[in-house]
Every structure is written in structure tokens, then in C-alpha cells.
Length: 283
View 1 (cartoon, rainbow, N blue to C red):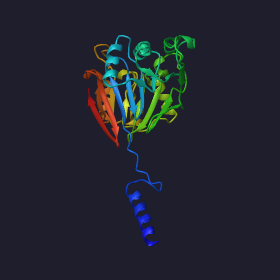
View 2 (view 1 turned 180 degrees about the vertical axis):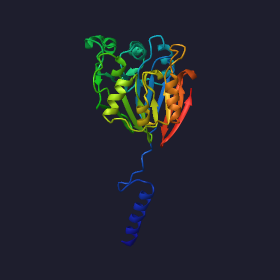
View 3 (view 1 turned 180 degrees about the horizontal axis):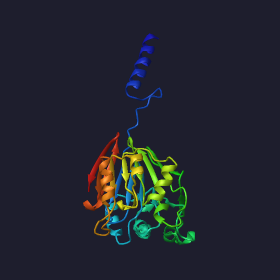
View 4 (view 1 turned 90 degrees about the horizontal axis):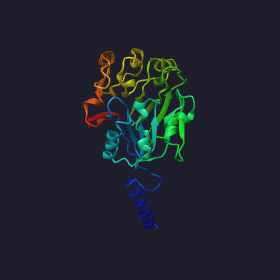
């Protein structure tokens, strides 16, 4: 009887040591959160990944679709959890029709609930999906999307801007890898102000600078609220000479923000959060 008891006790101790049995579980490995700002000249295309979740945020221009597709294939992307179109400007949605017709599977399509089109049928995403079974899921401030090992919150827009389509941009906060990333689309001063007044901004690790670094965005109050450690600007000065604006670069420098430009790379800038550390790679 004593020998039997000792044998059972030894089995239990071995199970405990190996992390199995008695409900013992090993700590899950921390998930990395990465943002790949792809070089599509003066346009936006961001690849956001965490675990099995893969989002493409904006699709560049129609002309830059070959460059975008090349990078997606280099990265081994055959499936997207979702395509998120921040707003309807051509330098953000231009490549979407080609993406729909490509060999890359799209599980969901998201867009801002506010846009300066009179009819939903005129929305570029709706038009591109016309001959498919997919529907656009429209988002606004307060919504959230699934993200393995983290969260993806939609901060804005909170209201429709009838004059500036840029201010209808989706603004999102991604959390994971021990840090945060703020993705601002083409948000200009009016949308910045509305989100500041709502108290929705706090300090972040990584900032995707709004509106390609133009001077009509990225105000001092906004940067004081978010105080990023690293910022990335998607633009090309040959296409748009006033981007990035000197005022914006000086402001970021004042706050000791390390700035990366997609135009300084062949394929783009990869920023990864891992265990609270920020890792960057020019690709």
C-alpha cells in the first residue's frame, strides 16, 4: 500500500514538473505586434499582424498596386483577416479593386461609416465588391476588431465631416507585444481636435503620422497627448513636395521621436513590438 502511494506521488510530481496534469499550464508566449508601412509612394498601405491575425490597412493607389502586391507575396500573404479602408481617397483605396480580383483571400472588408458619397452604392469598396458575396462592414468610434494576443480599437471618427474627407478617416489603436500603435489614416486638425476633446488619446509607443506628414495635421496638443517613441510617415516628396512638412518634423524632433519615412526604403518600414521593445527594420 505504501509503495503504491509513493508511486502515485512520484507520478504527480513528474506531471507537475513537466507542466502537465493537475490543471497546470505553461505561460503563453507573448505575441508580437508588427506594422509594415509599405512603400507605395505618396499613399498608404499598412500591414498589421499579430498571431494569426493579418490586416491590410489601405491599399495605395491603382498605379502602385504592382508594388503592393509584390511586397504582400514576399511576406507570404495568401489570406487577410480583413482589409480596412480608412477613407475613400484614391491614394488609400486605389488598389482595392485589384486586390479583390487577386489570389489573396479576403475574409472581411471594413470602411469608415462616414464618407462624402451621397449613396452607399457609390462607395469605392462597395463598387469593387459588387460582383461578389461580400459586404462592407462600416465602422466608427467605439467599435473594435479581433486581434490575436491584443486589441484593435476604433477611436474615430466620432462625427461626419462634410467638408474634409480626410477627417472621416478611421483612427485605430492597436495593443499587443507589450505596447501600443496609433494608426491615424489621413486625420487632419478637426478630427484630431474632436478626439482630443473626447479624451481618447493617451501615450503610445508607435505613431503612424496622419495625412502623409502634411502640415494640416499632427498638432502640438496631439503630439503632447500621445508622445510616441517612434513614428512612421508614408509619403514621397517627389509626388508631394510639402510632405513631410518641416513643422511636423520639427515637432516630432522636439519630443525626441525617432522618425522613419517609407520613401527612404525599397519596400517599406517594419516596426515590431515584442515584450515592450520596439524593433525597426528598413526593408
